[in-house]
Image (cartoon, rainbow, N blue to C red):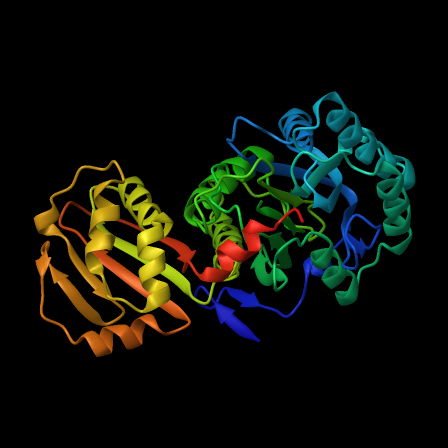
Length: 410
């Protein structure tokens, strides 16, 4: 047992099927050569659903359809996702195929089509092989299970260039009831979410009033998934969904409930861990970069500055090379679009201060380089503008990133 966020939340070794009423499956239908490439998540009872979606003007057909269903009825029973093909930029056929995916799930599970949410990830501009997809959906429906193995298979089914699965599960108490919240995510390249190719699917058995859930989820996404960047590219397929089926038996929480903060902390912890896992697994990455901004004019200003720094290719390259080139960090803060006084900024690489109030500070290059060679690198900007603070996550920029993306299609 590992307690996190004080003593109220317990991190557990489990996947999304630890949530009451949630079943899952992951199968290989043939869109990819060997790995599983289709995932099905199913709630045995109707669940409130909220979501955030890419702000890219070019949206994949599944994003358009799922966004409309989330914002329409706001209730869902299933999520189906294929990997290996983004079903983006396929015109009317893409929309028909995305609708057909949802219809196939609805038929297999006896659901209303509007209760099925659809997602895709992979190569843009190639039509789906719907014969394979339909066969995969039928197989996944047969294999739906509430087991650790089923959860692990479901995670694999949404992966593309990911090198590791990304999942998290926590237990917490609401009104005397044990509640679970768990989720999975995929993402390694084309990562610079503005939504809120990353996907995140979370579920909880805690009952939460949908309007309160929607506001909370948007705030959490802003502080977690929207604070990561691997390469500055916002995908056509970004999507984060949260199902809340209420099977824990608690009275539905509202934002003014005294126990609502317990649920909020559990959700933010889970989303933050998934976001960090995506950044850590950036294509070709060898290090997780965490940028902390303190003393900004506002939290929003701090978020913008932190994100600008983790997005900088020059900063990322310096982190890869172990070069304590702090001028690149201050430069990236300066073009973030947030006014501040450079002479009020101090910079720390781990425990080593390298800049004092906007000016050079003598430091041991060897010690600073050793800090930058660690698998997790923390950069702190301490400003003198106010009380705003934020954190963003990214990764180093390596030779392998170019190799991976130079031949992504072929």
